[in-house]
Image (cartoon, rainbow, N blue to C red; front, side, top):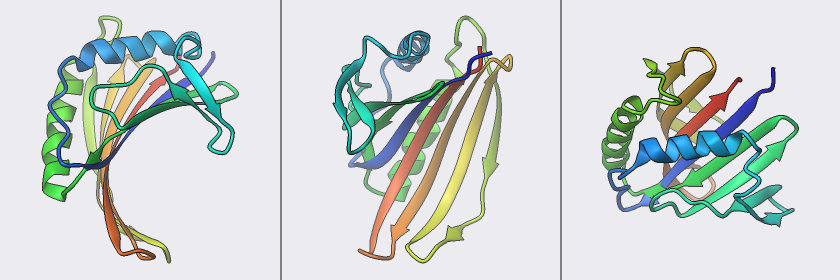
Length: 168
């Protein structure tokens, strides 16, 4: 069994992430592209970052990229959300939209988990929560949020992550 893993990270600093117009269609496209290692989506390779620019970008994304590592294939997009309130509002809307999206006609089961705050000598992480979606055990999606405070430069980053794992 081959593991294909797609990671869509939604990092936050834009004033607001709009309600996603056609998320279900994009999830289907990402799932389909994962089947052949995103071969048609790979753009310029950045050796410093070990990633390809993606030719396919999700709605309003600042950037999207592809990372390939053996059997793992990651697709990541980044958005920036300005405040925690906007991060939560966008996350909650995004989670509801994901829940409405079947993959290959399969609806998902859902669970949510909150995590304790954590800290290192460089960063402090708070407001961490993950929503999980399981599609008959073969495909798993997760959407997460967290606020990261950089002790070095005194800035916050509000982050929304999205991950799709294909175990077929």
